[in-house]
Amino acid sequence: MPDILRPITLADAPALQALYEACGDFSIQMSGEGVPSDAALQDLRRTDGTAETALTHYFGWFAPDGLLAMMEYRLHSPAPGVCFIGVLQVAPLQRNQGLGARMLAMLEVQWRQQGINELRLAVLAESPAAQRFWQRQGFVKHGTLPQVRFGLKKHVRYELRRPL
Image (cartoon, rainbow, N blue to C red; front, side, top):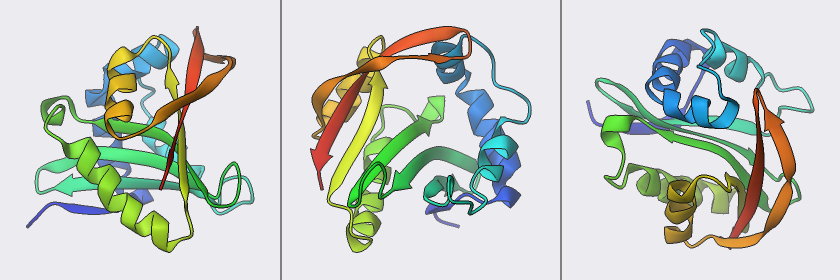
């Protein structure tokens, strides 16, 4: 069975949880805390179609041996024609092999068909590796966002943008 990029559903919660736990470094960096045991279920249940969550999507790169990467994004948010990328996580053993860039490129095709013409995201100021990744994908720093708290940590974030 070949690798496939598809939406992540509630049935995929165990695979998403396993990826979250494999990417525990992300959780520690973001919140200063480990991954909650029900993090995947909490996230996937937030995409229940209510006005607040209807535009949030979770897509995954699935291989025969599990979920290798995931991306959470919101279409037409914060404005029509904009896709805001919230999270990209790649399994540690798959990092630095182009998987994140390939996933982004594949999703861009779908986003164009859905009327998206600009991509935005927020990257932590203290994450130079993430900044380099997104800059290699053509994103440019647009500004500095107000400090925000995630769990035990406060972060300065940079807003990055790129036309699609």
